[in-house]
Image (cartoon, rainbow, N blue to C red; front, side):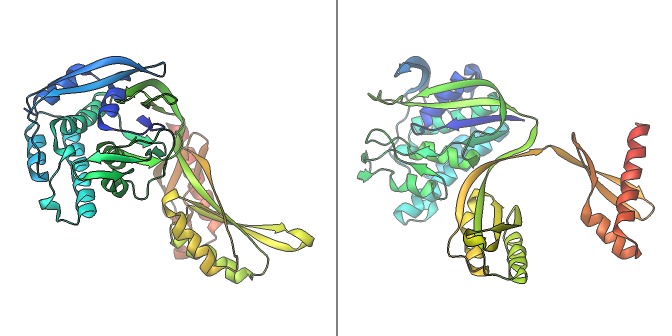
Length: 386
């Protein structure tokens, strides 16, 4: 699986995104062909430049019909009529719809009445469509991103001077890890925010990949202390089938009964925890206690922390990030004398699916270990025949 990771240490905008993807090897010919089919009357060029000594590509949109206001339906029609790859067309429309919803929330107007100002201009349409086409050109199947540097200070917009991040940008970046560092200026634009929150599967550290290319997209300004570039890293997934950033929630508890902690474990798993463990420990003054450890998707941290507080006696929890690596696995069914059992298979070995074996053991009135042994035997014999 081919992955693209956006390293937004100096923010993200539409033209930076296109420039970075071109710099990483996206087809210029495919991009130009797609953009010209939008019939916006614009011309396009890519300029090789530098930002604080880093060689980067600057994407330019020249001319075109710079109409002051466009509605979402008008922009969607422009994209639908263009000659674009199917997924690029769907992604571009999804990005604009996400952007429209953010504008609607920020200005308290219905979605169908939202007027796109800066983001409805030729350059923004070209940037969004260009980014989606460039990702297709590179064969990207999944997009990941770092935390987003939004900048600080104020920005001049069609609505006047607004704080950074602008309201629409802030709305788009809800539930997304953001921070502010560097010069007092807008580093992440609404177009850039809409692209990354729509297309990225996850935000955090770089997944484990075999990197094949990197690219840098230049922003308009050249800052004195910080390279104003967006970096993309392109590569194939490593041997780990599942690579992700997970959150770890921990609490040490010395005044709860086993029944309470067992119930808390069930509640946490029902609430979406990836795993929960209870570990016997000794605390200060040699007090025996239990360490509750919860593995969670980062987006579920607040929900699961509330469950810990509600179902245990702890007054505090520790939360930190960790990297998860899981071997790629597949399932295959085997027919045993007791019934069908799914086998979980990876490069490290194989194992019967517990729930299948448990259900058969209960239905047949036999020991669980007999079903497990039968499933392992059938799979082993089948694999030897192959």
